[in-house]
Length: 67
Image (cartoon, rainbow, N blue to C red; front, side, top):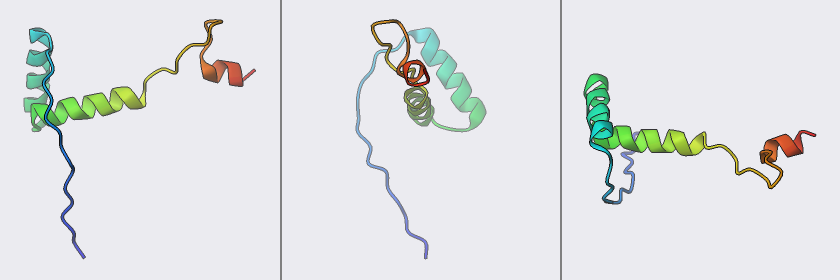
């Protein structure tokens, strides 16, 4: 059975450089999505692919575990 799902949204204000906003607007228009949707997807992608914090020796946690 079909169930409509709703994603809880929160309103926040961020200040971004004008050239970045212009690029986001262009890409959103080309892809047929809202700028808000594009920004949310970009943030989710960036967080999912964020490098692990480095240890004091300058190595990432995954490099240390692989030894």
